[in-house]
Image (cartoon, rainbow, N blue to C red; front, side, top):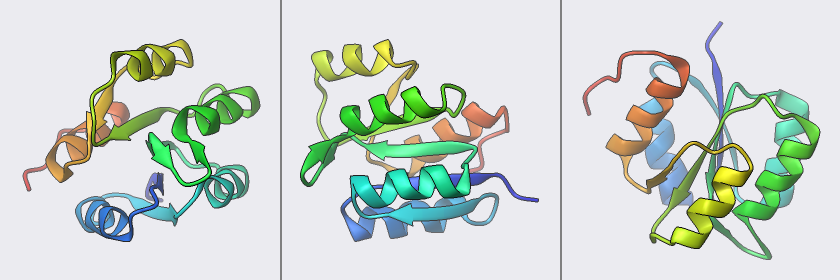
Length: 122
C-alpha cells in the first residue's frame, strides 16, 4: 500500500504539479481550501500533509494548529511562496521542522526525506 500525502493548496496548478511529481511513489489526495483539507485529514488519515501557508479565508498556521490538536503525529511540510521568519517560527512551535518554497524539486525531496526514502530526480 502506498503512503498517502494530503496536498492542501488553493492553486490548482500547484496541486496538479505536486501530484504529478509524487504520484509514481505516493498516493495523493487533494484539497483546495482549509475546510476541505481538514475534512480529508480527518477522513483519510494521511501519512504526510503538504500545507500551503496562505489559504483563502484562513491561513495554513490555523489549519496546522487544528491538525496538531487532533493528531500530533502526522508530519506536516509547510509550502510557501514567500519567506517569513515569523511564519517559520510559528510553524516550528507546532512541530514543523522546516518550510519549503513552492517548487516540485524541493517539495519532492522534502516528502522523501520525511518518509526516510531516497529522493528521485525530477
